[in-house]
Image 1 (cartoon, rainbow, N blue to C red):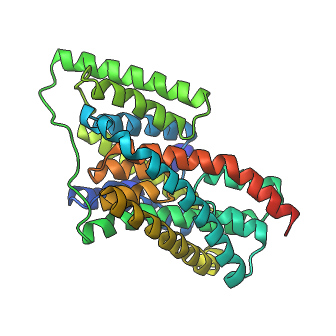
Image 2 (image 1 turned 90 degrees about the vertical axis):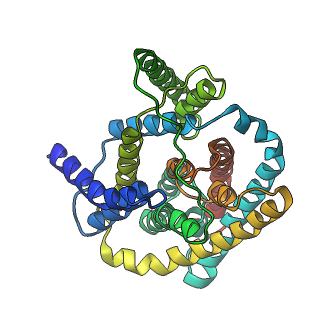
Image 3 (image 1 turned 180 degrees about the horizontal axis):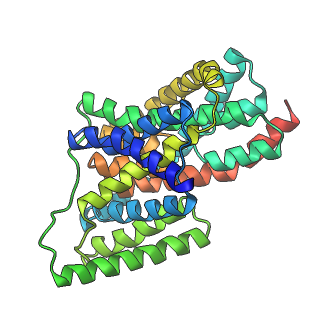
Length: 343
């Protein structure tokens, strides 16, 4: 039964993502897969991606992300402190602004509005909601729709407005025995880095640990081998299935009732992020797409994969998303408990 559900899930992911990916749509493998699996899940199909397989997908994506790092990228980190400071202020404003919107326009309780507006850390948000007695379903819907809108709409929007670059792929040479040795070293070292980061409870540890080790090996020139492109594309399709499967067992009527709250709060978040992003672009002369992906409150793994697909600096994007998740993870428990005590 599990194998049948898994096969059906990846069948939808393949059907949705293969066409856009082969057609060269930015992040087409990911966004097409997300959309197809989410629609199937909402239609009542039993979408499933086992946790063990999802963890493997995160490691593969981390390896692919790290492979595009070069020594030149590492020298560009001097401008990060100001950018990170702006990010933290932006995330605080996004959370407050979204909560204010849900309370005043849709009449949500203070606790549920605050949790639903959290710019990331969805798993922790849902755990807090359960602990504090909040209604999980509307919070999960708003959070999930935010992730899907960003994963599907952001790369398309960037492409339409001419902000997206071409897909970044390091040159692939002949697969020699030396390259196979390097590839084996890369995979083992990245897997170890992923496990260690997960053990240290680093946010998104499997992906970031693998990416860090891969980036170190490629950035220092010690390793030149990369995963074959078809492996990275397959991982993008599978990640889309992981995200889309979040909509399984969610009643369609409830989904429709929450659409206004989800899209409204998302619009508030985008407007606030755009203001702070414009400040950075004007102040530091950063690329628009880079800032938008770095400030987008979407799924960390999806945002990192978008950075790779849109030929953006994964070090810049990754650093900002790590800081975003750390900030939300540290502050949200205090914000949520205060909201529960003062409804």
